[in-house]
Amino acid sequence: FSMDERARVLDLPSIMCVVDLEGGGRIFTQMTDRDPHEVKVDMPVEPTFRNLHDGMGFHNYFWKVRPVRC
Image (cartoon, rainbow, N blue to C red):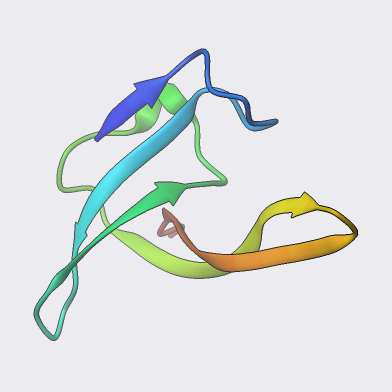
């Protein structure tokens, strides 16, 4: 994973990560709903459908991941 403190997003720091999917394959995506100090390699995450950005009157949604809560 990587943390970007200077990204032009509202949810700083922006955390981008590579996620291994259960059925095989990998995705490169953004992590949301997290405490940056608790992010670590191999932490369990789950997909969530979130607003990626707004522009020209359109809301753009896509998949992000968030830590699995116990």
